[in-house]
Length: 272
Image (cartoon, rainbow, N blue to C red; front, top):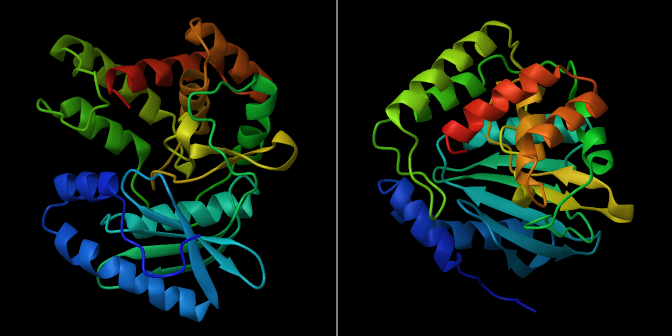
């Protein structure tokens, strides 16, 4: 058990330094001290760190139960926190107790989901996934200044030198990206800016009590829940048949299957 000051994991250090080189030094130096002060504030002690891509995520034991504290230097960190609060309100994400912004980072203080393992490489049934998206249907975001999912996807498709790629992945061809941009334009026309997670990959889906699923680490965008359905169907599949799986999940949730297929095409080409 960890009881003293803990360091940011090496993988997070590398990823943050690569993505935000101008912000990384102050955050890497100061976030562990901020964690210490937050532990004092909540009367807790750090127990363990969790695997995170761009965040310093720590379980903290308190007299009232375990918490999860997450810090990020992401300039859009407050938007991500706002979406986390929306997901918490809809009962599809962990309860958010507090959001704090410092000169170097944004912290969220959340409940600890137990057992809290992510799906990771494991699959999930449509019956497990559907309740998440049922609760998100027709839910308008509280802050209409949150960036849109379409803008984020367009930035990836327009980037001729995209380097934010999963290992072993190469950028789509210009022709593929132009077609996806055309599809995105049509989708955007009919896409109200509603509550949207924006990154329903298996690593962002936690297993809670009785196998219930929870969403964590949203992208900080508003958009269309059909996109979340598409990405979840893709990223939690155990094998092939992703298009049919996406269509089946769409029908289970009660959303337009053709729209889900279109978002799936855009997401695949954007290499999300």
